[in-house]
Image 1 (cartoon, one colour):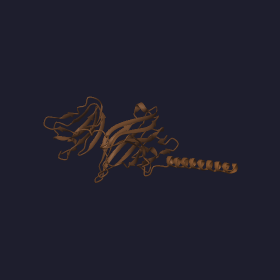
Image 2 (cartoon, rainbow, N blue to C red):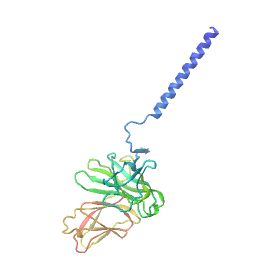
Image 3 (cartoon, rainbow, N blue to C red):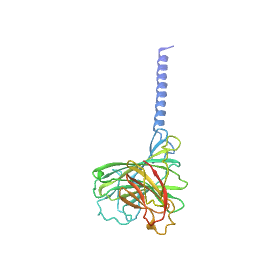
Image 4 (cartoon, helix red, strand yellow):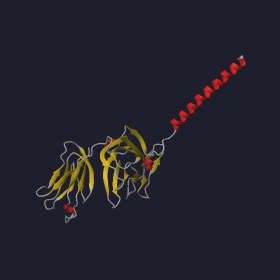
Length: 287
């Protein structure tokens, strides 16, 4: 073989090798950069085989009232009322964000991210579940930037337990802003787990009853807990003032017929007047 032919073969072989390497690198970069298909944009991360997180930006919230004055800061990803006068009327300081949740997953926690520099106001967020067939909504959990967070950034966690059932219910977030200035909501994160693959054990449903000589029933908790209190049908009582009331650490909460409420406290007690009829319901200690 002549020297010129040998040199030409070396050059061709080198070029083929380089083309193969370039093709492999291009294919790898395309695979690495490709976005997964059919991924819900609200789903931020997944850890393990069962635990998932759903993130909702504050910019996804819309005002309840058309007269609401608010600002969406895209740089800070912040929903804020700014420095307007502190005279909220109607729903002018309330905002909502609908949720599309995977069916039959279990909601286990909610984290609120925001900033609160106003010691006279707060950022309060509620997760609600509403019936499809009647205008009834139930509060699943509630979290707020209380006084200890009036110095700036905060991260507030609320734990609870709720099985998503899209056949009967829809779900939404409700935001109530009373903090002014550079205060507001940044985002909300929901923690979910898939039933049957490591999900938390559902809390036990227990009965409470105020009948006979019993005029009070205290939940048997030894520490501060989050509890869900439900009432049975109370329509047979001749006067709503005869309905039982819920007292949480001294705060009185009026109850209505066939409803549930989620509360957080240590001394959680149900009471009725001496001249009121019997009443009953259920309770669950969530956390």
